[in-house]
Image (tube, rainbow, N blue to C red):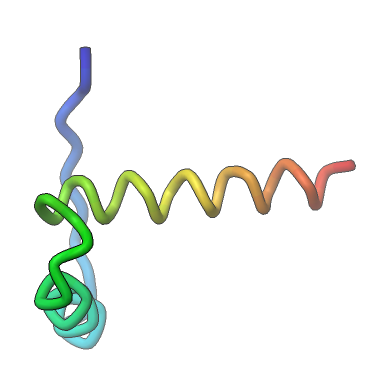
Length: 49
């Protein structure tokens, strides 16, 4: 089961998200954020090694 989270972001970040969403690759903003976090988590794991 997924959990709801909330975040406060800069206006420029919101604009970037909106531009990415226009491309239609992601179902919704939650999908985009989840995919972005997966990339960040993998990067962090690699940096720990």
